[in-house]
Picture 1 (cartoon, each protein chain N blue to C red):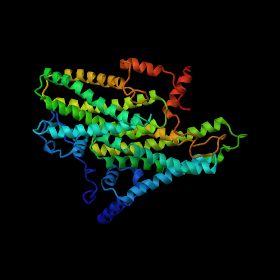
Picture 2: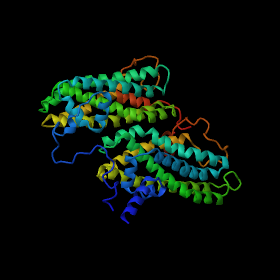
Picture 3: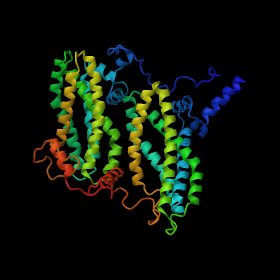
Length: 245
Length: 254
């Protein structure tokens, strides 16, 4: 009996599955990172492309089917570009903040947390698609209302925030397993989050639009995608609100 | 069940963190400190993951090779980051920005080195000038390799904005974060010098930061464009920042 349980445990840990990731047992996830295989890497990248892709598809579908396809490609790309763009920095920050893990381990830990978020987003994509299907079409200017647009926006923010929170809770558990200290795990998580949020926001800005604009054609990029940046725009908006020029 | 499960052990098999002790171990007491540093890449890894190795090696005879290696890594990394800075304005800034950043960093370190030595001696420490110099090169190396970590983000933003102020602030933030980690290394190294007080070091840290930011003004423009390599007008950094912030700029985010 013990032998059967043992064999099942090894098999379940060796075979990549979404359940294993979502359960987030630090020992299992830690073992994944310590003994990484191409199969597991491919699994994570696939989950990101499928999960975030499906969610992106549902998001863009409201504007037009082609916008859905575009966002289905863009959303996973942003996740992977954020992971890779900050890989070096995150790998350096971890040991400097007291967590003695290597570049590969930090990259994989972050990739796994994004995989968890993507799996959650993917699971919400049918719900999102249902809401979008019930909403007045964005392309129909007669029926379109700003309030509906705001509701949909808030729904996306809530779902993405939920997925991100769960993924980061799993990540902090993993980091705690590595370091043995919750303070170190939180410090590293905060540094990684700050960096990923900073780069991720700008990548989202470059890759806009996502939901789409009823008065503009569906497109992969807006004209001049590299003109301006997210933070400047927020800063200028705050300045306008406060009565500046 | 757990006895049979081979994955139940401590994970991952990374470098173990030494147990927390009430009094830190002296350099070299931990065998890991004594591992030799054979080249620049090992030095980079050591300063990130095991800075005590660097501190120990700096106290050994023949530490000159390590210091040279760290200095070369600092110059190389600052040149690479400078190139990223230069991509904002393109043209002559592609070579001027790397030259100014690498040169400015070295001159800042050289200007501040004597005062650090004096402060260290005043603190009652028995550290030699070569050890102090080694720690400063360690500070430069850690700063510049962290700047390389920020380089992809800096490049992305440099392609997304035309605002010199925005890019200047962003580079200053990245420099500040990197410098804080570098100074943490210096502080950690200083703690092994048996100094009676750290007050001198803290004063020096202020001096170093002030000199470095003034250097960015003295060597301006590093981010924007200019006809001359060096500015014609002498300015204090606060007045330069104030002028830059109040200069009419293009509306952002359009």
